[in-house]
Structure formats: C-alpha cells, structure tokens
Image (tube, rainbow over all chains, first blue to last red; front, side):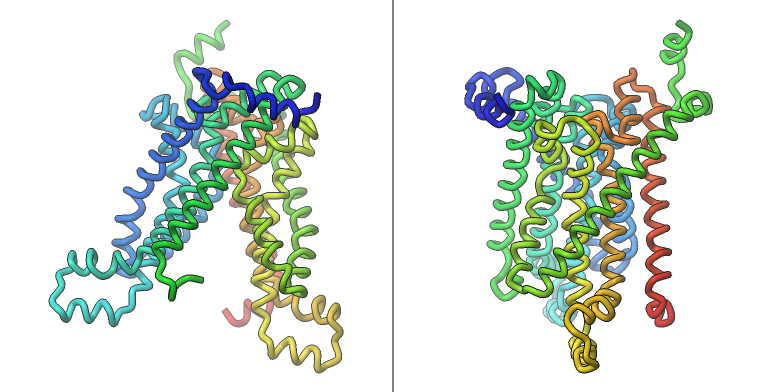
Length: 224
Length: 225
C-alpha cells in the first residue's frame, strides 16, 4: 500500500480526529499558538511602527530589523527561548513565532503612516484636531489597508512557522508529521502526508481568508 | 560518569571544551549546510531565470508562473518536506528539492522585476541596432536586470541558510542537527548556541560576499552612487 492510500485511510479514521492528541486537539493548539503570537507581535509592532511613521524617523531601523530576522533560523529561537527565563511550554513558542511576525507588521505600520497625504494632515490640524484625534480620526483610518496587508503577511507566516514547533515538541499540527517520522516512513508515510496536507491547507485557507478581508477594508480606488 | 554530573552542575552557552572535542563534527555540518545552500540557490537560479524570461516574453504566462511559485512559497516548509519525504525517503535529495522550491519564487520575482525595469528606450535602441530577441536579452536586458537578480539571490541565500535547519525533520539539517541535537541532548546549551551562531554567521557572510559580487558585476552602478 503506498503512502497516498495510507494517507486517505489515516484521514478517514475518526479516531485520528478525536484522539486526545488527534487532529482536533492539534488544530486548536496550532490556532492558539498562532493567535497568541500574532497578538503579541501586533501589540509590539504597531505602536512602534505608528510612532516612527508619524515622525518619519527610523525607516532604516525597520529595514535592518527585517533583514536581521531573515538570517535567524526559527529552529534556533524555538530551542533557545525555553532555556531562558521564559521556561518551557507555550510561552517560548509564542514569543519565537512573534519575533518573525514583527517585521512585516512594523514595516506596514510605518509605511501606512508615511503614506498619509501631508495636506490631509495639515487640513485636519487646521480644523483644530488634537494629535490624538488626528491619529484616531484621520491617520489610522487611512492606514487601514496597509495594516491589513501587514496582518495578512504576518498571520500566514506565523501559521506556517507554528508547524515547526513540533521539532521541540511544542504542539500544533506539526506534531502529526513529526509523530509520523517517529514511526518511520514505511508505517507513518500516510500520517506524514496527512499532517503536511492539513498544515498546507490551513496556511492556504488563512491566506485566502485574509486576502478577502484585506480587499474588503481597502477602498476600490486603492486596490492594485 | 562525570559528564552527567558536570552537565547537571554547569551548562554554559559557550564552551571551548565542546568546540575542541567536536571540531570535526561541527566542520562537517558547516560543509553540509554550505553545500545545501549553494546547490539549492544555484538550482533555483538555473530553473528560475529561464522561467522569469519566459514570463517576460510571453506576458500572459507571467500571472500563472508567479501565482504557482507563490502558492509553493505559501506552503509551510514542514509541510513541503512532509510531501516529499514519503516518496523520496529521508535523504539529501528531499531537503534539496524543498529548498529549491522555496528559493524559486524569490529568484523569479526579482528577475522579472529587474527585466521589466529595463527602460523602453533602451530596448528600442537595442532593436534599432539590429539585435534580435535573444541577443537583446543576453547583451542588453539581462545585464541591466542583474541588480534585481543579485538582490533576489541574496534574499534566497539568506532565507535558505535559515531553512536548511528544518531538514532535521529528515535527519539532514546541517547546523540544525547541532541545534536540535543539543536540545534533545538534555538541553546542552553549548551545542545549541554553536549551531545557532554559526548559522547566522554563515548567512551574514554569504550575504556580504554576494553584495560584493553584485558590485563587481555592475560597475556602472558604482560610478553613479
């Protein structure tokens, strides 16, 4: 029996879905890790990106940061962070994933603020808006398409990287794949394929969903 | 054994003793990591540049080519390896194919961007001088697209160096073997840190080398800067 048939059989076994460490549990773990990481990254990246963008400073920093994180292997952070004060469990995984979600969020928040027309800003100030009112009523609404684009990139990337948490036994859908490798390709080939299919499916689904959201919040005139 | 007692007592992030004792293993893994990276990026260039040229010549094809490379890029690395391993086994080839598929999008996109930034005047002038389609491509358009290609190769190289570590899934992860190996070896910090630091250093080094190479092959840009 080849791996492909094995995969169909594995996915058709209801126990593989409902087991204590079955697909449902792993999927929820995966979503929880991803959600935590994106939330953490937004809380860090958006205020900084917006503040830097409004002042028009630190554009170089944003570029350097995103280049620097490119060179850091996810696997390295996933193994190093649990050995720090963060301790073992979900926390270091969430932090590790968040590190890679920060650059796209930061860059888009920065660009979103830079792209606000200076005339619009002047007009709003001339109408007597305070800095806070300017941010809430004018700058943020204008930056929404950029923030949405960043959120989409960051989220899809986090969902993809969360699969690697399995390499350090950190939970998520990747565990299905690593368990498959654990029992060897001959016996676990179907499970490996099934795990890969679930991970890829989730990533592509998230990408499609967030692309739709991004289109909804982007005015027609600004769509590319 | 004294080793166990020691590791329970002191587990530093850096250890000369570890480096000395394991120099051969570390060197072999650096070589494996480097050869994975070089082969994957080279293969991606060999496959990606012709695809980019095809997309450039036959405009209707550029959408499908970019879209399919984009889908491959969206598929998480772990899933990609999981798709390949059951058919090709847990060897070198599985990792290499995964790496090439990832690097492909970066190469295609940057080459296409470089090609489409060639000014129309230049293209017309080349045609007026009697260059055919292929000669114009090889002698005018591709050289002018080089800065874009170099950017793409740099991006692809840096991300491939980081991605090789995921190969631990099939037991061929270059320096990732040290990182995960140390983690499984009772959280041996010196081994983890050595793998991680060498990995980042390798990425930075290759990036600088390629940046220098890029300056070398585009002398006309240096004068302007």
